[in-house]
Length: 98
Image (cartoon, one colour):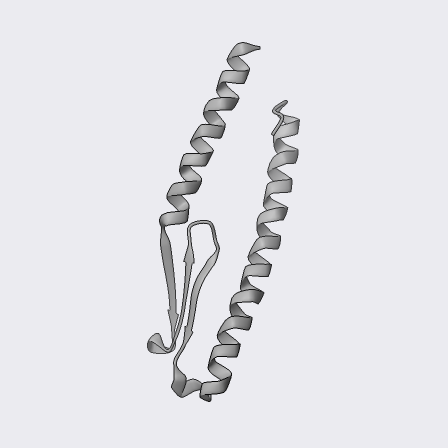
């Protein structure tokens, strides 16, 4: 019993460390020769969306970037929630309480 608790504590500690490391990573996607750029961190959270002004009128640019960030973040959050639920189910099948 103690060994199982120790392993769970180690797993939680490792997960927190990995999450911190992922949060600090950044990944960039670029299209149209750099005219459209998206940056996400290792937690799949959108950090930046940048659209070249030449593709839009100035008033459209800021709003579109903001709405795109919100929509992408929403989709990623739903994906992460589904993955977490699936992992919880698998952990339950393995006899682990998460």
